[in-house]
Image 1 (spheres, helix red, strand yellow):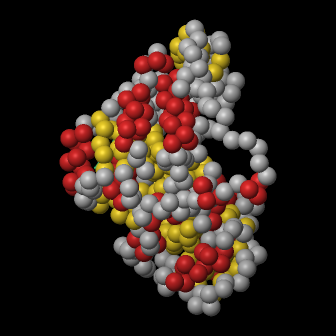
Image 2: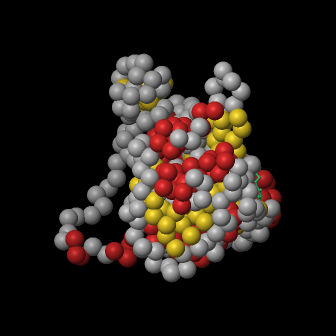
Length: 450
Ligand code: TYD
Ligand code: MG
C-alpha cells in the first residue's frame, strides 16, 4: 500500500551505512567513510500501515504471538533461539557461493506447512535440480522464479505460505521505485515492503543478501535496521566448515554459534566441532598448541600452529596468518620479544588455526605464544596440555570469560593439564589440572619451554 507518489528527486546515498544526503560529499557524515556516496533517484513513496493496535497494559499482551517455531534444523534453531517467529523478517548475509541458497532450500524442505521459495537469481529448473540433489522435493514447497516485487507480493497473497524465502533481495526490484535493480533505493524499498507484508500476514520471511569483501553491492548493511534478525553465514571458501551467527536478533540471543559442514548432499550440522578440529592433530610436533576457546556461548577446542624460520639479514621478517588476526600476531610477537626475551624479530613467522575457523578471541593469545615459542625452540608441548588467556602489553596473562566451560570441554576431549591466568577460577571438572601463570615467562616455564 503506497501513500501516493511524490515527485522524484536526486539524493546521495552512502553504500556503506545507507545514510541519505541532499548534496554529494567526499565523506559520509553518517559513518565517516570516504567515497561511499552514490547518486540515486529517490521516489518518496512512503508505505503507510493501518493502525495496528491500541495501547494496552503490558501484562495483557499475548506473548505466544512471538513464540518461535522450530525449523527442525538444529544448528539453525540454536542460532535463532528456537526457530522463526511469525511475521519476523530475517536477513541471511554472506559471500556468494558460501551456501546461502543451499541452507535455505534445506530449510524449506524441513519445515512443515506451505513454503514459498522466490528465486530471483537462478531459474526454477536450476533450483529443482538442486532440490533433487538435496532430497528437498516435497509437494508443499512452491517455487516462483520472479524478480518483480509486486508479483512476489501477489504470490504470497495467493499461496498463503507458512514461510517465504526471497533469494536474493538484491535481484528483486519494484518498477515503481525508478532506480536500477540492486541500488540502495531498490534494495531498501523492496525490503521495507516485504517487512510490511510479513507483519500484516504474520508470515516469517527470509531475505538473502550477498556481501562482497569490497562491500560494493548495496546489501546487508543498509537493511540491518529494517529487519528483525540478521544472520551472517561465513567460512573459508576452500574449507567445508560454515559458521552461522546472529549479529542482530530481536527475539533471542545474538551470541549463539551454529556450525555446518558443506557435504556432497548439502549442509550437515556439526554438533561436535572440537572433534572435527582436532581430528588430524599430530602430537609431539613442535609449533602446535591447543586452545580452549569460546565463540558466543559455544566452546571450541582448536589447534594453533606456528612455523618459524630464521629471517634473512637486513630484510623485515615475514608474518603470515590464517584464521588469526594479523595485527594481533604482530602484538604478541612484540610482547614475546620485549617481555619474555624470545628473539621473534629474527624469525619469519607463519601462524594459523586448523580447520578453517577464524578466531578473534583474546583467550587464544597464550596458545598462539606457546606455539610460536615451541616452533622457535623446536620443542613440542606435552600432548595433553592446553593453554588459554589474554596477553597484556606488560606480558601479563589476563583472565577471559567462561573459564569453567572452556576447561570442561578440554577435559571432555581428553586434555589433562591447562596453563591459564593466575586469577582463573578452579576448574569444575576434576579430570583437568590448572597450572596458573601470571606472566608470559611463567607460562613458558609451566609449559616446559623455558
Ligand atoms: P550456494 O548455496 O549456491 O551459495 P550462495 O547461495 O551462498 O551463493 O552454494 C554454492 C556452493 O556450494 C557451490 O560452490 C557448490 C557447493 N555445494 C556443495 O558442495 N554441495 C551441495 O550439495 C550443494 C548444493 C552445493
Ligand atoms: Mg545463491
